[in-house]
Image 1 (cartoon, rainbow, N blue to C red):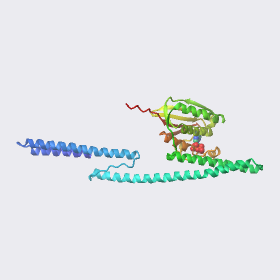
Image 2 (cartoon, protein in one colour):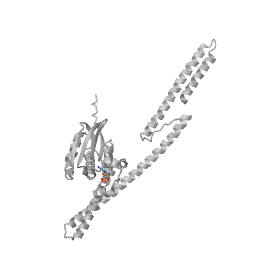
Image 3 (cartoon, rainbow, N blue to C red):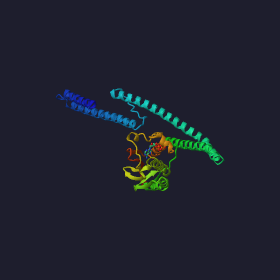
Image 4 (cartoon, rainbow, N blue to C red):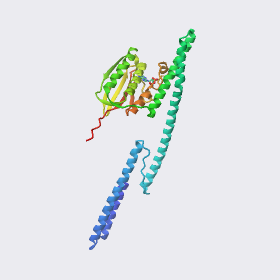
Length: 334
Ligand code: ADP
């Protein structure tokens, strides 16, 4: 609005000059003044548009998380002052975000180091308990030993999951993304996890396929299916049926694992992918869960450029979705 008022004023000014000089005998001077005013107005309009575009571009970059964006205005008018203040805010955001990233990295490294250090003693404890259990022991000693073995095994699973999560979160885990038919990923999961379902008297079936190629790391996607199907069997086995499937979406494929068990109350759905978030802690521990399965799923999928979500209702089963990007063949250079 302010910009438009300025140009209206400029137009009026040009008209005044024109009238002032437009007395008989001075037509040429009037025409020249009018021309100069028009050119001046056009130049100023262009400069103003460019400044607005710079600010919009800056806002877009900040919104996308690029805090290194600056407007870098040199003029000292109102817009220049506002741009200077925005640049200072961006500077502060950039240094805070660098600090947060630094702390995040320190946290991840710490967890990875502790987990790594625990690996060897835990393997050793497990080894000794197994050796001891072969010897002649009283019933009570055998029970104690079994408790030690079970707990060492649980801690070992926990450290392995913590290490994997730290690697995936930090981007240190090497993925090899290749074009894969979405249907292959479903069949691979079905073939290798069906026996686990059958052991729990649950029927694992492929309900829907999507004939599309996706970019994926086969092993990692298998791990995603394994975690989701393992959960479906742990928490949804009462439904006796687990379905997996895939459907095409705009820029990829959405896969799902659906069970018909206890379901999930709505208030948990948004938090369920957080590490160590469990609805029923005792039940999760009892079934051998580490509380990290869904966090691992989320970060593997994020590294693929996909997204995760869960849908469910208490008593009506749960469905876990994850998306993978479509494979887009690059055009041969002409
Ligand atoms: P856990 O090792 O405890 O299974 P996860 O990260 O895999 O850890 O899952 C987190 C929590 O989400 C579980 O403890 C459980 O409460 C809930 N959950 C996961 N999958 C399901 C499901 N299919 N049905 C109901 N609850 C589920």
